[in-house]
Length: 108
View 1 (tube, one colour):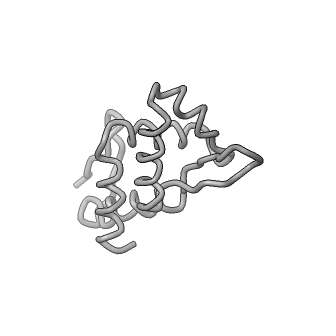
View 2 (view 1 turned 45 degrees about the horizontal axis):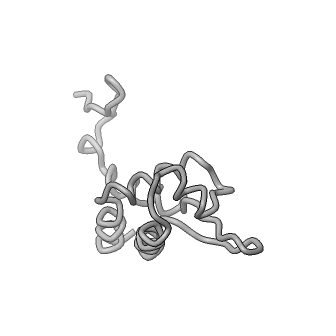
View 3 (view 1 turned 30 degrees about the vertical axis):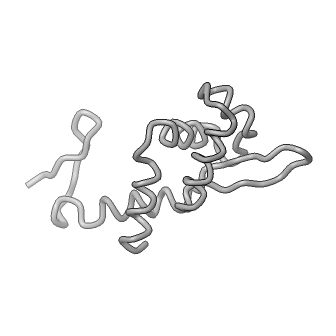
């Protein structure tokens, strides 16, 4: 993943409603959720939600699919994993890392 794509993904997530929507879709798994269910869960107006989902989709973080008259959104786990991999690439200067208090820390 290139730096510009990572910056776009992080910028899309740097807003409370978008971050909440993305986390909700990650929790929902690959089947995703209908836009109406996302709006209901986040207590966001449909017009606002549409804008936020568009930003996440433009960053490649979510995908949409039509099912009848409903649009379902799901997290793009490949992109999410690429962003995480980019952020943790060469972690701890190539040394072994061990979890401590749910955070990674470097072991000498």
